[in-house]
Image 1 (cartoon, rainbow, N blue to C red):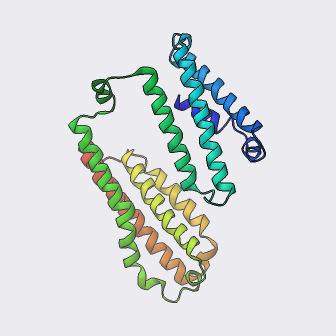
Image 2 (cartoon, rainbow, N blue to C red; image 1 turned 45 degrees about the vertical axis):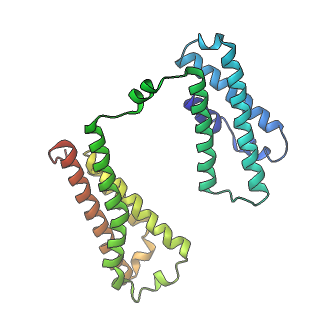
Length: 250
């Protein structure tokens, strides 16, 4: 059902269909019909035809499509009335609501017991320890590491004209790039693919190439990047040692 939702909401919903939602109900009916058809095909392919023989399934599927379209209509109305901005947070909230309706649909169709749910979503103590170790390392490196790098490079920003002209939104983009950079480097070390680190460095250098012509900014950029990469590599090695009992980059 999740696959049906993803197919119906993204590759099978064209940009023109999304734009026409503000012009009338025709686009909503087309979107709902696509979701309904894809849901039936996915159920038939991955669950079985027996479920399709149940009248209860068809009633719940129709209600699910109606709720899905209601969520889309409410989002469209709020965005058009300027009560909500068409932003990433609104997109995520919209998708969370859709996933919640999918979970409710799955529960109503299968009615699993509590013990069955625990067996599906529970994890062993060893798995819990790994999740905790990964959470500590990733949060420490990605977020706390950013604060440490900012403090260590603060004096280097004095006299750099390039940084003085950067608006707040673009400056925050640099912070987000640092988060993604450290996350990807820790993951690369953890999956024993150190070559990814070189690709990350190359991509970041290409994006910043015009500013690198200024000597002080180049020094600031180089020191900040090396600190970020070194911290992420160290975090990845620590996590690899905790998970695998050894450190290997092969």
